[in-house]
Image (cartoon, rainbow, N blue to C red; front, top):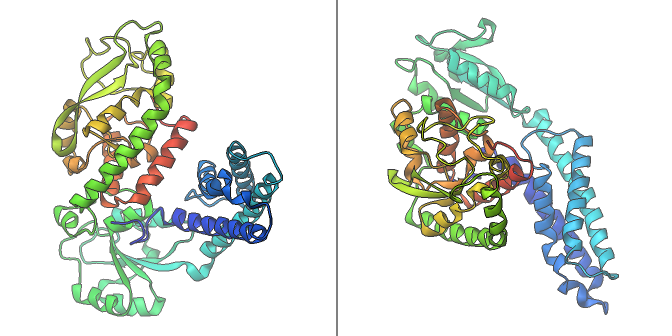
Length: 452
């Protein structure tokens, strides 16, 4: 399912980026109009003119201007200033030192002002009570409480009107927040002008009055089940709250041959580009791998790939030789004593994973996808975790939604949490999400987040 087809967690980023792109296009058009009749037509042959928009969006993303969090005006202004400075440094490297450069400075100053105005306007609109959506929750148990917690963290996206009690759902919510019974739901929707109803039943049997819900939908109220609401608000799927019928009826999880073909083209282009950029540094990496750590340069290991098939993954060795000869297969841990002197830096910067680009070009892996696990861990996790094998519907990736959204996994509990993100990725597979993960990965590497 595309990220624009529902109230996605990342839709805010799409909207903010679209506004920034529109502002940058306007600035370039203005510069064009100011120069089209002048002799200095070399302006439109300048590389910076064509790289203006990509550099601005990239630098803004790196400075986390498009984060889902709500920034204060001062923070926004500072981050926008830093992003503009980074963009200037990028573009000045490709610009000629001439009078043309003043148009670059002019464009960046204009963009800085327009970006702050646009983002501030968006924040004002989002915070406005006119756009807060009244919401009721069917259920009074622990699942309903989870909905309230997510609403509290949603930056005024929804307002909780109250809970609707059912005959057999347990009561874990505050009594004063229960505003009525399931039989009164149509009247309550009209009375409170409800926008959406979330079905968050802890005990699902014998609770729903389907005819009443149909009547609510016919008067314009959206009916949302708990897994879909959870997915929208958190960017992951609650594996403990879904069933096979939910997966079957979902608009996502539809990976057609065309999608696989386009993703493969994306993988080849991106992997070849990264390999071309990093290949000259491989001799240096080899030296540091061998420095004070005798043994092979590369580490080969069996991992589980697409459709559950095993393959051999390639990595620069970051641990001492025969690290698991005594302990056997083990999770990586914080300050792992098995890691070599240079191994810690390689893991933090993801240098050890560069040889996996060969796996991508071979077709064993994708550039973006769920991280491949070892067969021993897959067997262990799948025995206790529902829908774990569904993550193998796509090729594993060097990076992925789970990797950029959650720290390095070192236990079965971490694997379950990362599975929630992996299923979200598969359900929402799209070009925009692929590009978003690429940019988020750059941030992870630059700020050295999550590695062990």
